[in-house]
Image: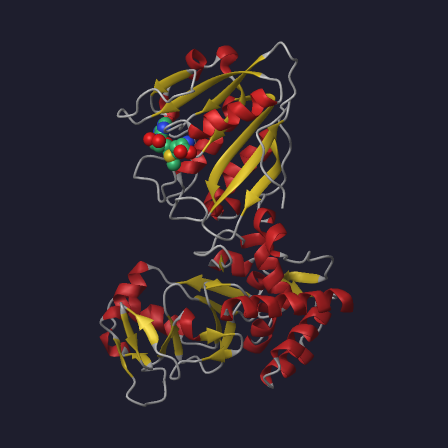
Amino acid sequence: MAVATVASPTTDSAHTMTVLDPACGDGRLLVAAAERLRATGHTVHTIGVDIDPTLTHPEGVDEFICADALDIDWSAVLPGGCADVVVGNPPFRSPLPRGQNTTSAPTADTGPYGDLALAFIDLSMTLVRPGGRVVLVLPTSVLASRDAGRVRRRAEQRAVLDTWWWHPDRVFDAHVDVCVLGFTAGSAPRTVPGSPVWSHVVTSSVGVPDLGTFTVDGTVGDRCRVSANFRDEYYALVDAVVPSAGATPTRERPALVTSGVIDPWQCHWGERPVRFAGQRVQAPVVDRSRLTGRFVAWAERLLVPKVLVAAQTRTVEAVADVDGVWLPGVPVVSVIPTDSPEVDVHQVAAVLTSSVATVWAWHQRAGTGLSATSFRLSPAAVADMPWPAGDLTAAVKACEAGDIDAGRRAADAAFGVDARTSDIFTVFMASLVTRRRT
Ligand SMILES: C[S@@+](CC[C@H](N)C(=O)[O-])C[C@H]1O[C@@H](n2cnc3c(N)ncnc32)[C@H](O)[C@@H]1O
């Protein structure tokens, strides 16, 4: 694991280094950073800003300004308009209050679920001088969430993410998982292709193997319609979900399948109770006669052969609904094969439950889960998953026979993964299952 550090932006020894914390609170981070820099021979001037009017001038901070860091004239605050080092443990708040992302925050495009911390990343990047350092404590969601994508891109255009710290336990007094990211600002804007993710901050610590080279033929989204339910569907289902009373699910009374009953190639509906609307229901079904308005057509659209994917997981968990008699709970992802190119639900399940899909998901989505060691699969993330160039017949056959490990190895082969890498993937997949059981 690389460790974030505030030390050593390149300066000459006569230079007084300006160290800024734009959300300094009681100043502890700023003072600690300044101490480290002074210990290495630098002359340091510290500036702390905080919006909280109840704060008194923090001890050890040279200059303290009570102001909204996202709405002040920084040229009047910083000598030369920029800082040598920006440190901070900025506020996390998600979603942003209405209007926050379009008014005071410099981040205008973080989407409705943007985090206030994203605005502080943008701000820090505008305030640091070329060659200077930015070191921030941030929620792990910034590493890979879609809403943070443009902020990551802007940060990479300005600076290189070169040091980081992450730990699976919550060592800070915060209700979210956090990481520390350290950047060195470049002297000129860099070209950044696509939308970068910073999942390696987590994957380098939890031993996620490299994907290496593998052969693909497009993506899952090229062959399937991928969707998830939202709050409206959830409320529409509340009055329609009833116990099955031992009856087999049908298209008229389909099973309600939530993430908790989905395992790779197995649906435990009827065996495990389903958590729904704050209750545990044994074998719930949806009485379609109780659905109204647009939800009548919504159910009709989904009651087709499909694959359902659990949304919060450590391995991608997907199961095929061959008869089209299940309805997904929120936020299960539904994957419906389209006609062209033609694929069937078993092939889709084999691809999604493959080791490649899980390793890929870790690299793309680490940091997005509710816990430090899980990821959240959005419909877009499932649609982006690679589809193998090779044949899936052996993978489907093994999985259908209940041998998921053999199925995964066969799917690895379809992706052109070599035997040694396939062994590494197998060990990694087993380690994820072990971690869940302990
Ligand atoms: C998580 S605390 C961190 C404090 C300190 N850096 C530390 O590590 O203990 C976040 C601080 O951000 C401040 N804050 C929130 N919004 C701000 C804003 N728009 N401008 C400046 N400070 C803000 C809060 O008042 C709070 O003191």
